[in-house]
Length: 420
Ligand code: C5P
Image (cartoon, rainbow, N blue to C red; front, side, top):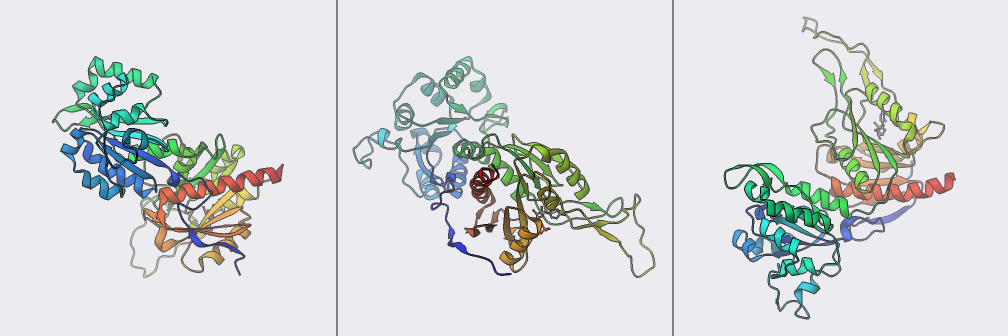
């Protein structure tokens, strides 16, 4: 079948869209002098990978721990440390660097730096930037457990909370000093996730979104079954992006080894039949249904309770019966939610996916090449809806998910207005 009008010929880049992605965002990443400063390098990379412009500002002590060149290479921008840096156009780096930023993130934030912030001290570039800021301030404390437990630190944190500063972590665990306890900086990926979540536009505020993710497992006998290579990464990224967009998310997940996205209500299932039951229980309140799960098309007719023994016979016959099509069922309800499907195809991607979209009567189908998407951290997808096809550039699944959610939010608004 011919695919209709292609309204975006070039892949739509992270910079060039009206989907209000976080890719336009600019942050200052302040690095202070804790051993965890090395983790800030990974954090810089996480931000850059998600298309966020990062201006790194280091304190003197941080420079003694990690070379600024590391951050310059990862952020693609020169690192600032000096209040009187001549590279600032008007000689006022503390003002210039904080303007037009969406957030200042200080990671790691030492006990000393938190004390400065709590008292409004401004004796170096980073503390002055924080005092002169017009944007949210997010800090990720990192210190020895006794410093963390010290009443002065507790007081400072209380003050910072009252001042509206967001505090991420710390975590408990092994510390650089050899002790074990509270004060370890949370991982770069967790910081990036929290910051990105706070920056993301709230395009689905309050909307209930029901998502299926992962593979299903259809038992053949006590120990064997039919499944597929779906990792659940795309579905979980979609859940994360929907949560970050302000949605209330119910995630029905097949067997995967991923941590539940914080904030989602998660139901774990194994078989397609269990997934179907969980969808039935939750669909009535959903405004949007997104079927990302790779549901097994067939299951064993009569799964055995015991383990099938090897015999002398040369062939073993297995009778398979089709599973219900959950997405098609949801879309055929009397008052269906806005329905989105994911189609993994090995060839004729757009034509096959569009055919599925029409057959299942869903508003949007997200198509990807099975051999490239499954298990990978990156994905390249095409969105097919009533207006045509819309190809997104290859990107991490987290970034793809945000664009898919932004596209869904746009279509959902129009669909609801049309439905009255
Ligand atoms: O397997 P298929 O390519 O048809 O999957 C396309 C979409 O349909 C996916 O969104 C998938 O979650 C959904 N689906 C379903 N129930 C099935 C098979 C697929 O909901 N039994």
